[in-house]
Length: 523
Image 1 (cartoon, rainbow, N blue to C red):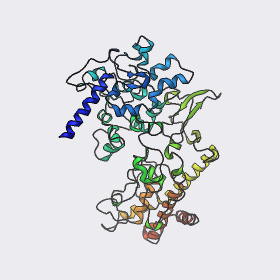
Image 2: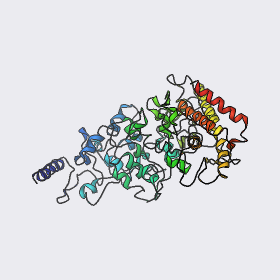
Image 3: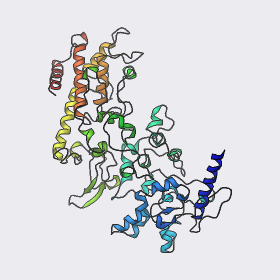
């Protein structure tokens, strides 16, 4: 009882102190809003960057004060290129959120008044706060995490144009175009494929973000993942205000890794995958760390030289390389921010609407930029990186083709002759076997491992462009993927080479398996 009384007294004392600094209010006794303008509150003490909102939201104020948003005005002036046209994004006003009026920086009539609204304060994103401070229980600021395709609200209202086209690139990326599966069953919805589901995984504290899965003004469902999923507007603990880190040394780090949190969902084989004929799901991070796929016990520890996994900032080093995109004459055209997350983007100075990235069908490997790989610490040149890329993918695809050739391009292993390779031939023979004797059962309650099922899991995981597998054709971890596939081939050869199951397999295919096994023994 005494503790509860003391807590109430401490809260009351804090609120009285905050009211004197302009801000914290009580529902029982509501003082008048600070006399500044019609809607925006701005700073209560500009010189110390104390926001009016922060008088009550003390913890958020302390976090926000360490971010680049808190120094937006000073940083602009320090560039030596400050211009009135820049003020829209370096101040708090009605142009950068869903507020209907502009009674902030642009409405102030004196320089002293304008100082109240310098920097990207709380209301720049959450909307005007005068009504909230007058009646906290009845009104709430709008959490504008939604990125409108016209850059009208949210982060995209400032983080766009040729100098920082984050919004343009995100809008055409797989993250930005991912459907919000509202109403979808199972873990897809609650984990990664909706903004509110992913937020519950990455930032469970940010409940307000998850409550607004639709635009609160238009109620139109916005597809894709938004900026605030990965970036914390309030916290500068991690680089670029990321909610999670970018460095990793093992799959165990996936829980705190900005990419691994979603890209390592179901990477390993189990009884369920034997039964359902599925591949790994979202296995990119686990492949990078050397734990995805089916690892036969006879392989032991095969992580090998995890070169790509040890690159500083891991995934982002390759998938988010940035830099200027220049015209043929060498003049700056647009800045690549790396927010398409394409490891090898096609850069085109004429593609300003998509942040300098060519998203057309004309974008082929020959047009892709290998600049992120061609560095002194990785590959010696872009051409060297391109050669290594082609060599690894060609080799891995060769091993997969021994097991399965997806002739009809449906990312599913179909029985021979629809598809070709050893696994389709096994499926063909399985169709004529008695129940309970199938070596490659794909239906029913058969959850028992066979060499063919292990090979099937690895072929689907590493040999298909389907997004549910790894998708890199070995590039994420060449040594590891090679070892898995060659071992799968060896096990298949041992288990089935003398059976009728492989009758009719071309000698060249069997020879390729022998060569693959020999190559593995030399590494």
